[in-house]
Amino acid sequence: MDSILHHLENTNNAPTTQQQAWLESERLLLRSKKIVLEQEMAEFRLQFAAIERQCNQYTRVLSPIRRFPNEILLEIFNKLSSSDHRSVLSVSQVCHGWREVIHDIHSLWTEVTIPLPGHRNQPKDVYQFLQQVEHYALYAGGTPISLTIGNISESIVDSLLYEIFEEDSDGLSVPVCWSHMSIYTTKLLNFSRLALGHYEALGRDTTDLTSLAITASIFDDIYAGLEDVLDLTQFPELRSFRFDIRNPSSLDNRVLINWNILTFLTLRSRKSCVEYLEIISRCPALETLDITPDVIEEDLVQGPLVTLAKLRKLIITTEYQPITIIERLLCPALEDVAFTFGGFTGINDLSITHFLERLSAGRLHRLQCSGDALFAFLEKRDKIPSLLSLKVTAPFGEVEGGLSSIFNELTQAYDDEHRFFNLLEEMEFQDYPPFSPGGMMSCATMIESHIMGSETHPEAKNPRLRFVFTYTERPQLNEPTNLIHILTRYQEMGILSGLF
Image (tube, rainbow, N blue to C red; front, side):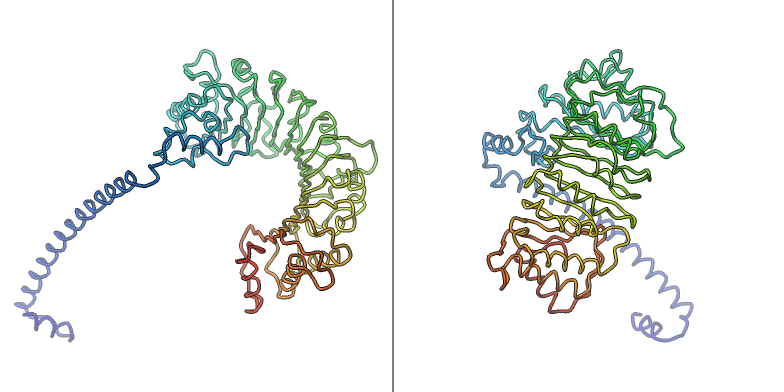
């Protein structure tokens, strides 16, 4: 009968009645066998997975890593988890088998993050989040805790904060001392409900609160709930404040804070440079300032200077106007500057000149700016002789040849005064479009001369210098094969990164 099947399969003839009955019975038999085999295969897969899990368990138990005594692991983790906020280790990086080892390392249990998936949270989730906070508080051993609440709905944040801070709630069974709070919400809550205000117990439990961040993604037509005052004066140790709510009136007599003791201030509010300067003038102790003026206005050349004698890091981001606010800032201790802006307004060379002239010589170590602002800085490079890191970002509307122009300008500055590059450790170029071969060849030439030394300036060799290219979206490079070979070699040497 198999020969009949083969014959019919290779012709267009229909089977006879007898042949059709036989073929149908054979097909049903094969299907039943197939079902049996599929069931057996599923059982085999389950058995295989179970055996594989057991093998992995035996492997983990027999692993040489278990020869490390807990005392040694504890010493290692202690070294990696200092009380410094720049600690390189977190609880999430410690494997499950070693969790019991770190229970006594209080500094590892000081950052609680509650990521909530937006408005789909349920009231029952609050209890789970409270358990998480309580778990961290237990092992923190009284060390101040940083609380970060992610993208949450209004009802959930209100319930969660009520349970944590209200005296008449079931709340936490473990006493907690807070060091930092970061709250993000998709809707601007009434200030009195935003973890502060009517939560009287908060003042009792958070007298050591040193850092607070409040973020809301709201639009111009959402101003509800701004009648209440956010009173932060009850926190005498508050040194860091981030207020990321784009509302032009949100800081006008609505926030009470000890401005004079702030050392870190981030403001993302729809205010003009004049309004920002008025706020900044209240903060003489600032060490880091990050602002985003976004109201178009005339240049701020006139008026008294605002002195920030302790300011070390300045970040100004704007999309609509030149950064003329720097005309009114006096920052003699500044070490780190980042200017980011869009549009075609650019930055006034005279503003850069005046700004650099007010710096203490040799203090500025890190600079970030867009390509068209870089030229103004290079003109006054004698004011920044100790620069260690230079980051150039592509401004809005940057043409494809922009990178070549920057490299040519840098090369010219190098030829004129190569000492400017002797201390540099990193040059980073961010979000420049795919390069022309000429632009990349300029890059290769710079690498050859700056790192390996040029024929005209062999003493300018700087083996510490690295070139880095970063992109929001990675471009495709269509370069000549020989140039790709050169750049690949630089990358293998550790001189260049980010292109491939």
